[in-house]
Length: 267
Ligand SMILES: Nc1ncnc2c1ncn2[C@@H]1O[C@H](COP(=O)(O)OP(=O)(O)OP(=O)(O)O)[C@@H](O)[C@H]1O
Ligand SMILES: [Mg+2]
Image (cartoon, rainbow, N blue to C red; front, side, top):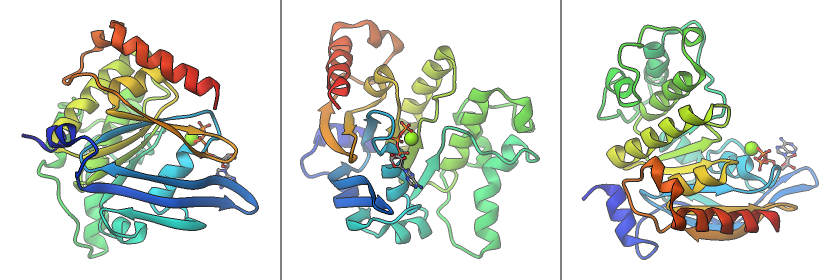
């Protein structure tokens, strides 16, 4: 049984916790971006995050990834502080823009975190797969010597995902990674991401503006509300795995999207 299947069967019960937020608040000066956010993300789970623009989705990921501090409350990643987890490379971040180095090939971009670790003398966890195998995993076999400008937007995002996986993170934080892509490319990458999740057992927190994407990918959808950012509801997505694109045309799927659309309207 894979890690994901374990997470799926254990539901919320006694699964180990990947990320735990307790009454976490974030302030920018006198502005409260997130207020008293409490939740546990089970290890191996796939959570998607929805909410109106400005409700604090990116702020939540930045809080978890030690890019900004909590003004109050506590955030733990696999029991560590966010700083300890960052140093131990427990998590990796994939942004909307692939942020590749333009002068390095796809392969050299994937290798970059390993090189940086070596230069700094930091012992970093290594993926079970080599950088080449990770490029293969994201469907880029044969394009390893291409420079970023020679790749499409979807291919660049796939390189960014391979780069995020190279240090074997246990938690993958993704902030609208497919937001700028056309629908067909996005569908394809959604399927690929589910495959990667299944193969690696990584826990995923995935922000999106797309309700169908949130339902298609997520085991649970976190709905945040704005002013200040806080948790509105967690919706369990009880749809079978492996998921295929045609799942989106089924009645249970559209019931979830309709419910989330209603929730979003009242945020
Ligand atoms: N560095 C900052 N300084 C001041 N305010 C900030 C900063 N970063 C975010 N904010 C504010 O915090 C709130 C939450 O921002 P955040 O970027 O988390 O929203 P979001 O839910 O990701 O929105 P979107 O869906 O548009 O990406 C917004 O009101 C934003 O203006
Ligand atoms: Mg955002």
